Image (cartoon, rainbow, N blue to C red):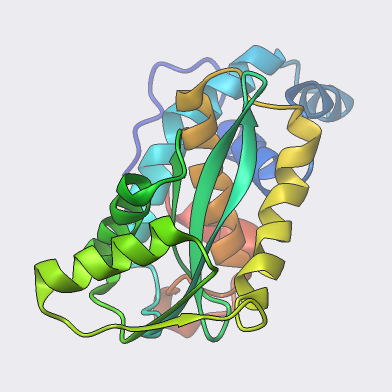
Length: 226
């Protein structure tokens, strides 16, 4: 259970604010105005602090037994995210059904970053049987090193057409990021992207719900704090 004690605002206001920011293409000032229209006077900086504090806890709860299993045929690619005016790299992978496997924001696009991403994904989901990547030499080298390290044979495919699946999936995340007008620190970018990816997975039906009940995406998000 996430502890909301010590906050001036009620739990429901905090969770709703965080949920809206992560689920829709809004700036913090947009959200401040929307809450004011509903009679809730909250400074946008408070919402920022809530997002930074509670997002990692909510995402950790989701990963601990509430994320549905994914397939062993992965599509992996990276996209660009602007942080303090500079481009950083968001590594992402989906399975053949477009279910998100994992993601990782890195400062560089190289073999070391790709290996970090694969190791993060494998800790959660185990080793894949097939990975489709682009023509990046760094991604190829990372997969080859991973196979040598684990002894597990991974079929490596380099096919841009097959990787359209993950490239299309990037758009859902970028659509939410765009109104934020860039991040001011790497830490805040990493935490916010955790939340955006979490909401994206929930919307895709990747959360295990109690007794298989049909909860809305927002209800599923709120339940992570219970």
